[in-house]
Image (cartoon, rainbow, N blue to C red; front, side):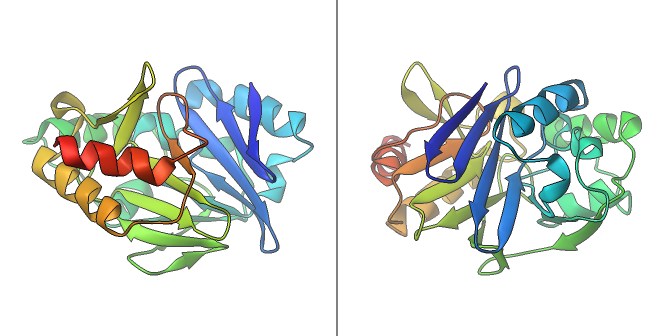
Length: 223
């Protein structure tokens, strides 16, 4: 189901994983693309908001996981995918994750069933811009995890750094994270920035549309 969180900011609930669309003067930016099993749902949701997936020339990936990159095949082929390192190299096939870590082992298994996207891949890091979004490195859930923030639009797309469960914000759990210490450090870092955002949009769960920065600060204080 497509839900407009604010003017030009859309949430797509894709069977347990979220994708988002931000429309601004730079065009349409898709934040994450869902899994291979959600491609039809993604196209349907984009159509519901009168946006052809081919119009989203910018695709901002918070991280490399099968349920966030597997839907890239439904997106514009001549678009650009923006991702952090080393996740970008895993996406392109230039890097094979280590089997030794629980998370990178899962990434490596996912890479066996996912082909490299047809879109060009551009690596981004702290302070870079993707359309109207500022990039923040937030490693932990994966080594190259990113958050994309627009204080002008009062929104932070934080991927799987955190999740929402029953109205409560939680850190990415140990079983699903590459490095839980890094997860906590990234949460604290974002909270300390005191970002001026109401909308906190995560990869799993219901996004917060009010007091997003305050929810993040509350979580950081509990860690």
